[in-house]
Image (cartoon, rainbow, N blue to C red; front, side, top):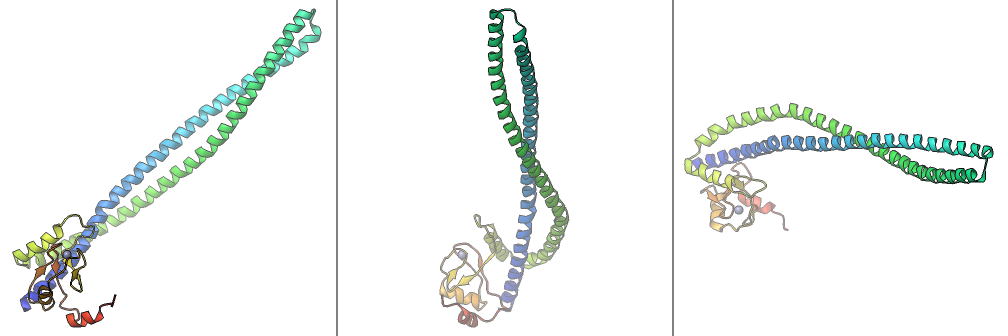
Length: 255
Ligand SMILES: [Zn+2]
């Protein structure tokens, strides 16, 4: 029994090391992909900003050309109006008046086009400014996250190396069949939170809700045998350092 208690202590220690290693592993894998996603997002914000800048530039150019065209038409109309009193016959007057009417129509069209174009410039101006802010904020976020990760990663790697060093002698000291059972529990797929050990509430495994036989449970609590949950394969371990099983049961919430 004393030997089994040592094994249980080792398994519990090993599991707490492996839980920490798993958390480190998740962070080591997730953070770089998170940074990559930020980078992709930043690229698309920059592309949108550049597209808006181009569109704004083109719209301003078009507006400038329309304004030049308007000014020309207005001058032509003014000249035509000045010409009328100097004309020799009714035919010439009529032709000039027709020209003035046509010019006035063209000016009307140009003026409304210019107004629309000015609205468009105003809208694009605001959208461009917003996209520039957004690209800048994305850049700052990526820089901050990258700097934080540059500091964080070696810390995680150091801790991982320490844990690897700590777990090796424990794992090697375990009997091979026990080690295999422990590894089998860790290898069960589809678990968001893998572990080699499960807790039991009443007689129910808290991981997979399988009912544990009363005899097994008692043997585990008394540290007389090593059993695994038949559902999730996790070891049913009770910490020898924890208060006795009887005391524990007394503490259980009535719910
Ligand atoms: Zn289970």
